[in-house]
Length: 358
Ligand SMILES: Nc1ncnc2c1ncn2[C@@H]1O[C@H](COP(=O)(O)OP(=O)(O)OP(=O)(O)O)[C@@H](O)[C@H]1O
Ligand SMILES: O=P(O)(O)OC[C@H]1O[C@H](OP(=O)(O)OP(=O)(O)O)[C@H](O)[C@@H]1O
Ligand SMILES: [Mg+2]
Image 1 (tube, rainbow, N blue to C red):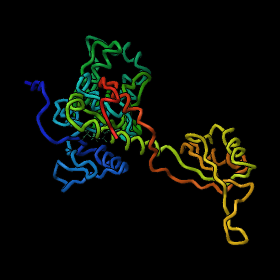
Image 2 (cartoon, helix red, strand yellow):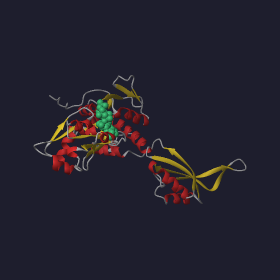
Image 3 (cartoon, rainbow, N blue to C red):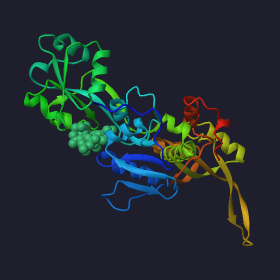
Image 4 (cartoon, protein in one colour):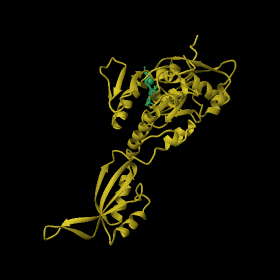
């Protein structure tokens, strides 16, 4: 019989965060935290508890992805990092789970139906086709998946009435060829596994997209002293790193009559407006007397551009008379207050004044 969820939080003095112990998310989670200057120190590889020196009151527990969500739901851990797919499957509709950060930009994949290219399913192009031809009481559609809860909701929402959900612990893509199932519902990222197994996605067959998310236990957020402060710090560090990762900082020499005129030139371009407009500085060179002298008609301009727009931005700078463009990575962008912090406070019905954070 399943254990009923306790009505009060387990008593303990420490705060706990669960991270995936193995699989694809494990190393990327640790790397993300390292990128935020948070080093998880694991005394030895077989040990399941670790610490982060910058957050001494937080214990880190390594758990299988499914257990990260279960333990969050029960309040045995207060925070966790896991794929959104796992939250949907294991924690669906649980009011105790609060997604604090919904886009950690790793573990990107989506859950989708995989339908055989050959045989009875060869002509099925869309979910509507699939329902019209294979949702039959006399021969239910056999779907193998590790995501029974997600699958059940998806098929119900899409009007299927005769689906048999089957289980397997891995290599689901082999099941249709083996004759064990008709189609699969599994994670896809590059699509190679589907393709190599003679399966394909169909129109309307995408179930949900997923990436790493930071999740918390709602009651822990409200009742455990210091947890909200730690969450605030995590959100600040994560967003500072994740948003910096999207941009390059460019420094270029620009010809112009004045700072204002150079600024105007740059602002005339959509690409070069920067995050908050460009920064323009005079260029100082050594004069004949050995002292610094302002070089007239020359300015250094600094702008941030999206990484994907790097080359168009450089062409634009040249078009505006710029030269010598230095391209620098940005480590962190600490903005005023993370947008997700405000959303979290709203979710918890708290006012900013209730949570004094530095
Ligand atoms: N191909 C993929 N590309 C990107 N992310 C993925 C991919 N497969 C899985 N993930 C993400 O990683 C999480 C963990 O999956 P993974 O397959 O590494 O572990 P697992 O299947 O839970 O455990 P095990 O290694 O024991 O099978 C998934 O819940 C999902 O969020
Ligand atoms: O679209 P692709 O890039 O090919 O990735 C999809 C595959 O990745 C996952 O399996 P994984 O490699 O984690 O193996 P597993 O079944 O042992 O978990 C998933 O279950 C798919 O089989
Ligand atoms: Mg897997």
